[in-house]
Length: 101
Image (tube, rainbow, N blue to C red):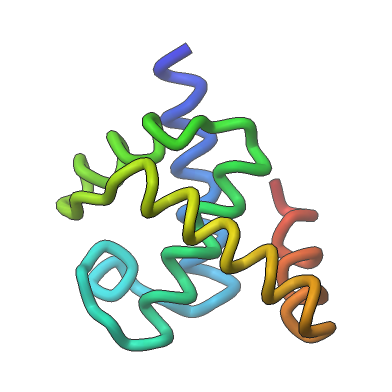
């Protein structure tokens, strides 16, 4: 199962890199820039949609050099869900990204 989750996580990372045009220096850093924050939060959302549990997401993020708690991941996913419900453009972007899963 670990290998399956690693493959799913890397697929989500590649989707973010390619379609949001974000590099690893931004995605796997503690930057507070909106590009970095939105990319990380969207990554967590895609991972969640791929049935990757928060503790597994946290482990993979730590392997990439960034520590993030399960509760932070949950809050980030809730933030993206709120953006999706409040903003059609966000909903369109997330729906497009989810098609690549």
